[in-house]
Length: 289
Image 1 (cartoon, rainbow, N blue to C red):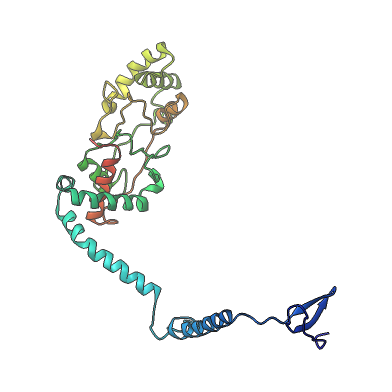
Image 2 (image 1 turned 120 degrees about the vertical axis):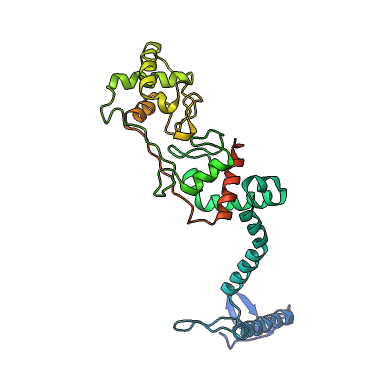
């Protein structure tokens, strides 16, 4: 059928000889502009193969005439960024935390750098928004276990909590149930008293009994008022902010089995300028102290 070509009477265009159900295919040539565009793209592709890295080899690839490398370009960009930041980082490393906060330019840089460092190193435990999880403190609420001023936060970041560093912050709560220091009834009473400190206790008689036990067993760290002590890492029990849960079962479990959360020491892992930026950023989240 392909040899059965003729000129279409209506359009005056030669047919291809193909026909389907009485419909004949016209041999209409492509527009010139389309052909030239196609030829141009072919030439562009050929030029690209020659100029840019393109052809894979056994263990490498052709480098092209200009030797372009996206990795080299990235390395150059990173080096330029570090050079631009270098002056600020040197100033931050030489300045005290208070001096950085007082310098608006340094403060803005430290906040940006601290936020970035937090996302990379701290968000896995404290959350991307620093709201924490059960067992991981919320850094937005201005409730601090080991102190919330700039120096205290910096110290915590430097040396961690119960970490393997010699200067780590360390204190342990006794496991009053597991080690049989208190009976289950006494633990229940202390839990009721602890809950009553923040207005959530339900058994006044048990809380009254628990107050006596609390004074004997717990006040040395949590203070007689229950407001805690930064030096010992003893939480404030009066503010209804709970690290491991504030319902009766969670409080009983804490008293019976103790808690011993751990935070790594970042000194030696992060440079001094980064730790300062982190301290300033964390301090800003809850307003600090």
